[in-house]
Image 1 (cartoon, rainbow, N blue to C red):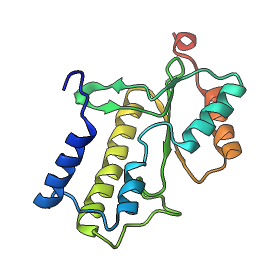
Image 2: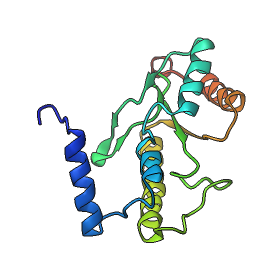
Image 3: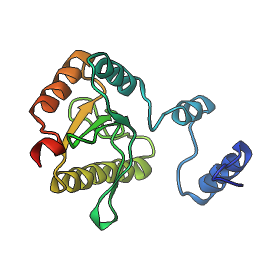
Image 4: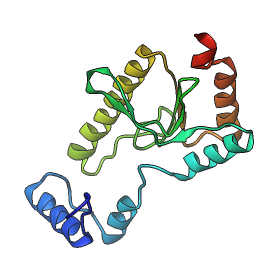
Length: 167
């Protein structure tokens, strides 16, 4: 396995071992398994739509850009405006437990509850570290409209001073 490539058969074997060891639950159905495997970490539909809308307005940014912060904290915002130090995360309602739509699953809650809690804790840690380093952090929910999200990002960008303007 060179360059971090893992074959589909190796992934399947690792998944089967994890199911057998009780590390994480086996899927209830093959359809549920396909559904969960199809979830993306980056380039989700809401994220791509927001990036397209911002680009049409003339904004330029980095996508899925790794930020290494003090204390070994790493953040990978979905949209990053480096000069203005604005980090935008487009959060899924399920994965980040949206106050409006999020809920903890009742099936395999022994697995999902701690996992979702870790997501929330990581979000808070990353937000705090970014703010401490002078960044403005925006968390946008996947259910927010593109118009609403675009207006929010544009308003923050207009108020943000670029790093070379403040120097």
